[in-house]
Length: 78
Image (cartoon, rainbow, N blue to C red; front, side, top):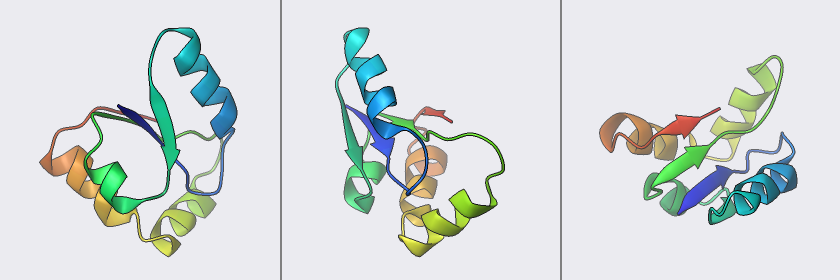
């Protein structure tokens, strides 16, 4: 399952629709357990990422992203 990370920025619905259009399955989530156990991750957004990082830390999903990408080698698009 592809997890689209909800960190308060980005057009999540558009990303989800694009994945569906090409035959993929995805969920939108800010749940650390879903993020750390994802098969693939999408971190949507554009521009400066200072606010994005602040939101990720504020929501407590920074560690989940680290586990998924660094430890579990989950592909990340973003």
